[in-house]
Image (cartoon, rainbow, N blue to C red; front, side):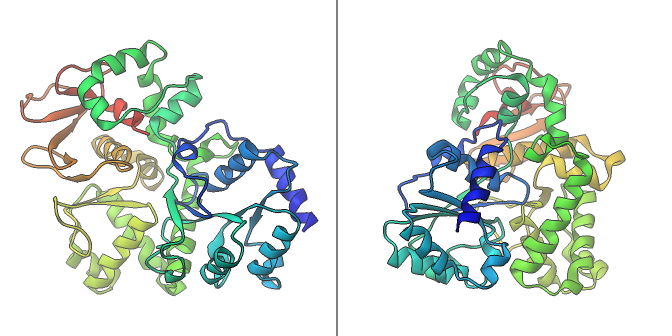
Amino acid sequence: MEAFFRTHKYLVEHLYAPVRRGLMDEINWDDRLIGIKGSRGVGKTTFLLDYAREHFGADNKECLYVNLNHFYFTERTLVDFASEFRAKGGKVLLIDQVFKYAGWSKELRYCYDHFPDLKIVFSGSSVMRLKEENPDLSGKVVSYNLRGFSFREFFNLMSGNQIPAYTFDDVLMHHQEIAEAICAKGKPMAYFQDYLHHGFYPFFLEKRNFSENLLKTMNMMLEVDVLYIKQIEQSYLPKLRKLLYLLAVSAPCTPNVSQLSKEIEMSRATVMNYIKYLADARLMNMLYPKGESFPKKPAKVYMYNSNLMYPIRPMEVNMQAVRESFFYNQLLKDNQVNEGGKNAHFLVNGKYNFRIEENMKVKNIPELYYAVDKMEIGTDHLIPLWLFGFLY
């Protein structure tokens, strides 16, 4: 146990977390079993350690961070560990990579039922269905999603600002005043292209080649978050990789499931399931007409965020696809996004039709809203595209 405390102390003391994540204030920390889900690379480990630092500090042994990929847990059970930690005065156990431990859901449920004075916060992959696939936790666990950096978080970090998030309705109704206030503190458009290329994943701050790191992360998403967690045979990895590539090079597109099933030599049903797995892993986004959802075929598939588009074909990135992917990604957290009506790319919250444009050289259709890339401050129904990055 002392070795884990030493590791915890070192990690908290040496933590580099320059952006305080908004999720920190959205979580009800009074709940006893909290799951933090998110795709690989968005900073779940940093988030857990930041919570420990903010609420306990490095030396307080009432809180302990532990990674379940430690070999120690090949011999000792999680229940035994939690019991010993509690006996030593522990109150909050932070568990990372919970899926690396067999039977984790049953043991978390045991801890919940038998250790009422112990709070457990654990991280898991976005692919995990905590309640649907783990009935032990149904009604007990409260789960949250940690997303990659919003453009707001990236802009604040790079420009030294502390600009708060705005709701979609705020932006829709008051975008001109909001944009003027933000532009008075910095130049968002000076940072926007950098964000589209590498700002979503916090590991861009590391002294490593970002594109190589992102490619490695994408492969890990396939190998661990899809194959391992969904228990798919390793031999299917090349087919999964090919499917991702075929979708990525044509996204946004309406997937031709028959053609894809021929190209990767799998059934139509399997192709649809694999597209769903790619979406669960936060590699793709599926866009549906209002009122429809999986298992129906999506109207379009997009890359989950704009950063993912650059490593696959760096010399052939379609900037309109980048713009649309950014808009869809940033609105996903608190809004319903569907296929748009006539002349529109997206329908937001069931009533606002949006077109995404590079500039306003096109005809302005009165019943549409426009998210415009090369625009610093908008007017009426013309809203700067970058401003939709300030929703979280």
